[in-house]
Image (cartoon, rainbow, N blue to C red; front, side, top):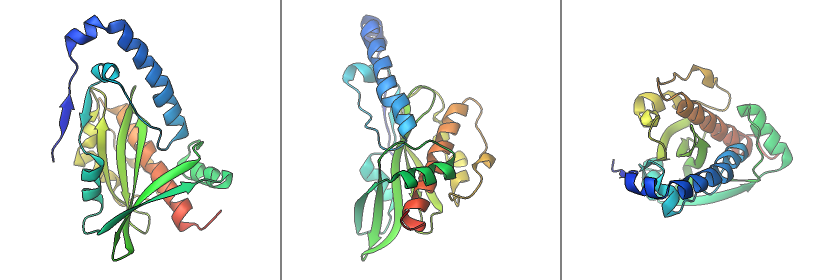
Length: 213
């Protein structure tokens, strides 16, 4: 698996410290806290100045993620789901979160026109910055795979290891996520991933398995 790492140029940080910290806080508030509350698909965008204060590790592009998620598919469709208040409430009750977003986008891998799996690309705050990840679901709503796509902090990246991610395999919206083992030094990243995966399975159950609410 290929990955690209953007490290922090120390000289640039020293020379532009005030500017970058100001922008850091701005994006933390706009794209971090708000994105975490709303849950799904808040755009994560940083200028060159912002990226210099981050330890950005890009593990998968969307194309690479889909190649993993939909092996054998001949087509990938994007399905936008506009949520009713009843659906927001139902999703929130399943994952024990407050859902405020109005739209969720699932990607559907198909072979000969038949769905073979679903994927949700989402963001969740770790310690300070969003973790971008993909949750892959089987048609029955069980988790098939979870992959970190972009990690933006210098610590906690161990959550991308199979020894942690494999714990989600087979989970559904109805199973207990409290049995997910934590990782020393990556507690906040672990919590972020548990929150993100449980939300994805809950959304899938409500939107695809429970009929229209």
